[in-house]
Every structure is written in C-alpha cells, then in structure tokens.
Length: 84
Image (cartoon, rainbow, N blue to C red; front, side, top):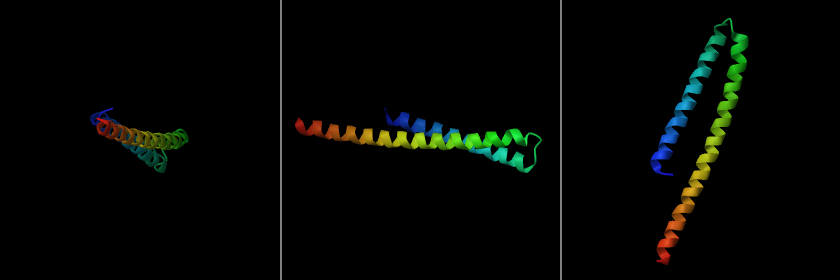
C-alpha cells in the first residue's frame, strides 16, 4: 500500500466522520426545537453515535496494524540491504 493510498483513505474517513458529526448535531438541534419527529430522531442519533464510535475504533486498529506492518517492512528492507 502506497503513501498516496493511506493519505487518501485518511481523508475519506475523516470526511465520513465529519459528515456523521454534522448529522448528529442537526439531529440534536431538531430535538431541542421539539421537532414533531423527535421520537424518531432520538434513536437514530443514538445509533449514529454508536456506529461512529465503532468506526473510529476500527480505524484506530487499522492504523495501528498498518503502522506495525510498515515498521516490519522497513526492518526487512534494512536487513536485506545488510545481507547484500
């Protein structure tokens, strides 16, 4: 995986998280304004929060795994250069 892919992936995921936060904020505003559909909005906001937290945790684990993989690849590259 190249650097460009990783940066592109980071941009996309951050954009997704930002959109989610904006939707939750809008949902909270509607609930505060006592929107007629507040009974429908509230559980959706809770579910959105739960999904967002899961997504962030998966991303954290993926970044951690990619960092370890990159570190291992660097070490293998250094070892292979020493053997030559």
